[in-house]
Amino acid sequence: MPQSKVKSQQLHASNVSSRIGEALEARVKDPLWFLARQWQTGEFSAENGGRPAQIAVDSKIYPFQSVNVGNKNKPIKPDVPLESVVEAETDSGDAPAWQSEALEYRFKLKSLKHHFTVSEYDGRFLDWSHFSYSGPASGATPSEVSQRVTPTQLYFQGAPHPRWWRLEEGDVYFDSPKDPEQNALSLLLPEFFYTDINNWYTLPLSMPSGSLREITDVTVIDSFGVITSLNPVVDSNEEADWALFAQDHEDADLGESLNGRYLLAPNTAIDIVQNDEIEEVRFIRDEDANLVWAWERRMVNEQGQTETTVSEQVGGGDMHRSIDGLPQFKLKSATARHWIPYVPRHNSERPEADGAFHLRRARTDEQASQSNPQYRTQIVKESKRIFEEEITPTGIRVRRIARFSRGSDGKAYFWIGRDKEVAQRTARPGLSFDYISDNDT
Image (cartoon, rainbow, N blue to C red; front, side, top):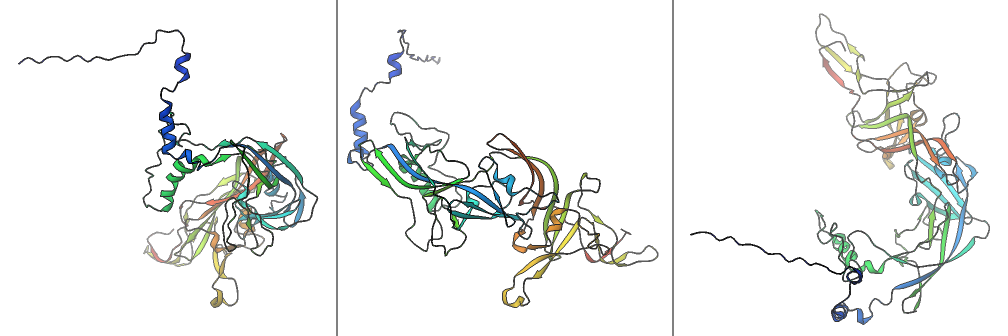
C-alpha cells in the first residue's frame, strides 16, 4: 500500500505597516485579568502597603584620626591606604604591628568618639569586619549630614520580576537547591527569594572613606504619602552573642554598644598589587615527631638575591658505622638546614592544671648559635614562640612580599607586607629514628 506524504504548513505573521510604534506599546487587551491576579495575591487587602518613594537619612560622621602601631600613634589621612601604614616595615625589617606569636597583625584605630582594635588581620583583604569596638574616646563634635534619596528595589539574577507580564531570568532556579543535607536554611532561602524580595531596597548613600557613620534617623515616605520612622534591627535579648552588620566588642562589659545604626568604612586600598616575594616560610605539623617544622622555602641570601630551597633529606646523623659494607643502623636521619623544628612547651609551671602549651623554636644543627643561627629568614627570626592553635592540620604559609597600591589622592605607595594563609599538604623533611640503611647516605 503506497504511503502518502503529509505536508506541514506554518503560519508566519507579517507586518505590512511601516510604523512599529503600536507593537512596541505592548497594549493590554484584557485589564480585568490583571485585576484578578492582584485580587488573587491579596494586593487589594493592602498587606504590603505602599512602596517607598523617598527616604530621608540623618547621620553623624566620625572620621578616623590616628592609628596605634607598636604602641606608637600615627596620624592617618583618608587618602592613604590603611594597609600601607599598618603593614609597613622599618628599615631594619621589623614590622611593629606584626604579632610573631600569632603570625597576625594587631593595631588600634581612633575616631572622634570611638576606639577600635584589629587583632586577627592576616594581611589579606582588610575590611570592616576585622574591627572590634574597644571603648569610647574623647574628641570634637562630629559633623551632621542630612540626605534625601530615592530607594531602588533590590534585584539579582533569577529574582522574580515585580511586573506580571515580564518573565524572570531562566539561568537561576531556586526551587531545587542542590543541598546534600536538607535543613531549615535551604527552605528559607527560596521563600526569601520569591516572597520577601519585593520588600528589600537599596539606598545610594555616599560614605566618606576612613570614617564611622552613625545613622540617627531614617524616615520613609511611601507612595501613599504615609511617613514611617525606621529603627535598626537589634536583638532585644541582652545575652545575644551575634548581630547583623554590627561591630564586634573586644570587651563584653562595655557600657556603650555599636548596633545596627553604625556603619564603618575603613580607608583600605581598592586594589593591592603583589610584587616579588622576599620570604616564604611554611609551618607544617609532624605528628610522628610531635613537633612543627618551619620550612624556609624562599629567602634572601648573603648576596641579596632570592633563592628557593627544596624539601630533601640529607645524609649524616648519629649512627653506628658498619664494616665490610654491611647495612648500617642509624639512630636518626639528618635534615636539611632550612628545616627548623618547633617543639611543644608548657605555658605554665603547672601543666596538669591548664594543659596549655606553645611552640618553641629549636634547632637541628648542633653548630648553630645566636651569632650563627640556623634560620635565615626574618619570619623565623621573629617567631621564637608561636601559639600552637595557629598551626592548622595542613599547615600554614607566611610570606614577606613587596606590595604596591595607589591612594585616592593619586599617589603611589610601596611597602613590604606579610600575609598568612592555609597551605596545602606539602613534603616533609623525612626525619626518621632507629632504622636500617643499606647505603652510606
